[in-house]
Amino acid sequence: MPTVIGISGALRKASYNASLLRAAVELAPSGLSIVTHSIRDVPLYDGDLEAEGIPESVRVLKDRLADADGLLLVTPEYNNSIPGVMKNAIDWMSRPAKDIPRVFGAKPVAIMGVTPGRGATMLAQNAWLPVLRTLGTLPWFGPRVQIPAAAKVFDAEGRLIDEDTRGIVKKFLEGFAEFLARTKRSP
Image (tube, rainbow, N blue to C red; front, side, top):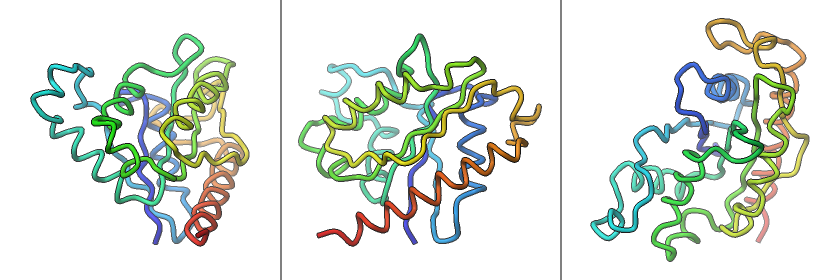
């Protein structure tokens, strides 16, 4: 069964993006496993810290991603772009540079996101593309999951309650699962 590492780019436990990631785990089609991984313990990148050795939290995340069949980024949008903590985690996982092919090379990646406002994370999702290209991933360009007005689709406990949105997420994950299957068969 293909395994995807799912990462939310928000640290707040009650984050809508963390809730969307939990919904993705719930709505994943049979035959696809989404394993969530927090970036909460990833320190700010510091070359001096790297010189002492890759932090354990980063090493574990890198190894899990290297062993996974794909990556699901659930991104907030901060100031019309990528959230710093999420970019920091990706930057750490690219260290040392010789590890990039092992961790990211030809790794299928899907992006989705939710925001309380009307922007629906479109700019953040677009801002991830040059980063993913640089790392040598295989971004999946299926139908986007860009959810605006989060308070209308999630309940107070963070459950995705809007049936139309649940259908969109489910269809998105089915498409990503098919993409994983196609890329696995490709030589």
